[in-house]
Image (cartoon, rainbow, N blue to C red; front, top):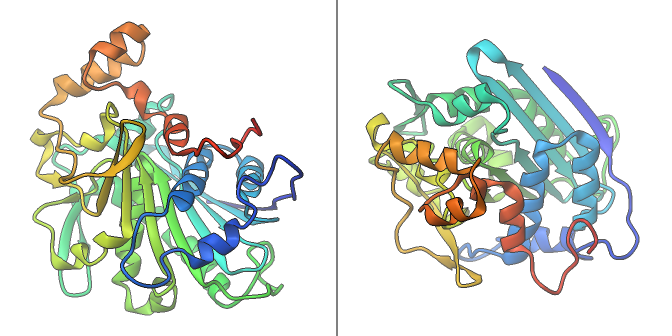
Length: 332
């Protein structure tokens, strides 16, 4: 296991994208019924997308988004033979009030990583909640557990008002707001982390600060029927789905009765709309394979299919979430 720490720099115009992002995150989902926040969605999509990069890039992009001089921590555990490819980034605002936990998703170029994200077969595991249990995707569960304890150690430090760059140093405020995010496999890990956190009595101080979970192109992580303990978290989970992305439909039906929970937002006619029902599982492997092959086909070929893995790429989610009156993370 490796842990790396780095500080983000301040940026001049056209950055930051949101001048008051730390305050916006600190205020978001603080009171009342949770409602999706488009600023939070855009900022966390950037965090989720760049979780595929190195620590310096994550620190750079979150600072450009508007988290001033963030402390960035990368925790990685890789065990190839166990299909463990778990990378978590924690970004702490300079003042300490806000922490974003981003899980890295599936890298299409790494076959074993993809298998960890999409293959379930007969393998599943049981996640014990406060008074109930739920069957979960074994690969996802194994990956979130692989970095569970060091992530909790960092969050405990943040709650205590310590800097994630140096636990011996203090920040101005203890953590008030925790957001968890991820794209693809990272979204599934984010959802399972939140479930585990909210049903762990010994971690209540962290759980009380969990504001919301925002995921992008997330596959299904739990099996139905859903117990009430899962449903209690659902109002704080905001899942974003592009119309031709096949990954939210995985695992396929033949691998078991998996399902989504939380609020699902689908992109259509230029805006994100709350879906009446969640994306259904893909009927079978044939549809998933066709979607995968379309990734290597022509633009015309991809356009003719119902699904295309090309649509799953994280930059498509950022593009769909970016407001027209704001600079991109590249400054244009």
